[in-house]
Image 1 (cartoon, rainbow, N blue to C red):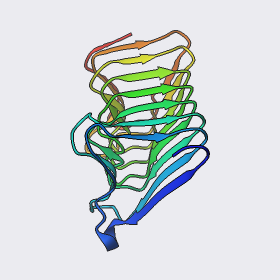
Image 2 (image 1 turned 90 degrees about the horizontal axis):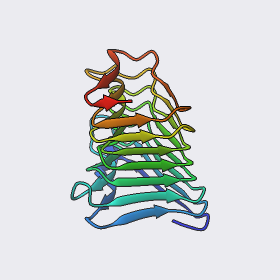
Image 3 (image 1 turned 45 degrees about the vertical axis):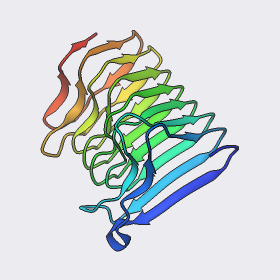
Length: 206
């Protein structure tokens, strides 16, 4: 999706039984670039299948959003499943209002980006390794964790994370960290008004 184009998928899982907006085979990629807009808009997904993006093999497809572009998944059951590698640069990336997890693992890199995982009835950002450079994250109002990662996280001094008002489901909290987390001086992380735990640390957080 390039050169200012807009591509929108819409579905109603309750009436049509739609399973996925996009099913990605191993080795495939989705590229949104040069001021373009990509949207998946789902309804009727509460208790029904209706994923935004499903991979056939874990970690073997990629999503790239660059060049002043916009990526949105709204109202799917699960936003994306089976750990795609995601790269966002100079763009906006949003997964919101999902009726289950917004995301399901995968490498996540944001550079000069605006990232939103909000009001999902499960995890917000669920990832492997996370790299944040000069980017702003809003991970708020999710039923489970606002951010959870199983690998390492690096965050530079020009970035911000807000992980607020999460964890009102059967598990969850603001931020769940594993591996090695390095947050540079000048960065800002807010973990406010979460149910259960604000932060869970299973690694080394500096």
